[in-house]
Image (tube, rainbow, N blue to C red; front, side, top):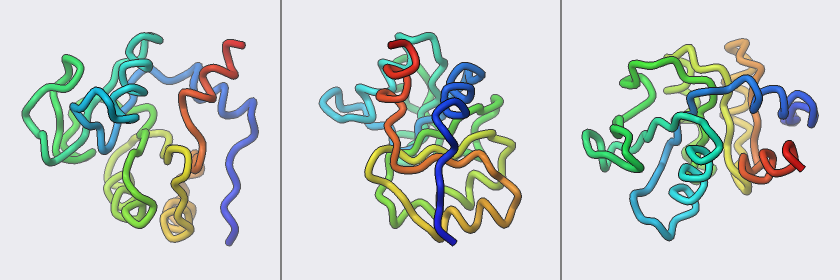
Length: 141
């Protein structure tokens, strides 16, 4: 199987429909890309939900941090992932235990095993190797 992202219009629609974005691997360090993008998402009106076991129970960007996706009590529209590609199958397994709508691996991240797991489970809204910030900027341009 060769993974293929949704087309540009589908990606824009996902971004338009989303309200809550879980950010897996969100760092509290302001110089990290995950932090910068999560702050931008907040600035654009999205509610971010930090997911990072290292900081579970703390707050990042004013939001409570959860250990994993299963612990998040709210509805998740997009799971935006900042973990290395080899960790994507584990994140996909966690994702499959939720009713989250979209699995989104940031720019430079892709894993065929994770894509196959999600496909086999009938979870079709999968985006990999795309930056949510770049896609948002394209949408408003």
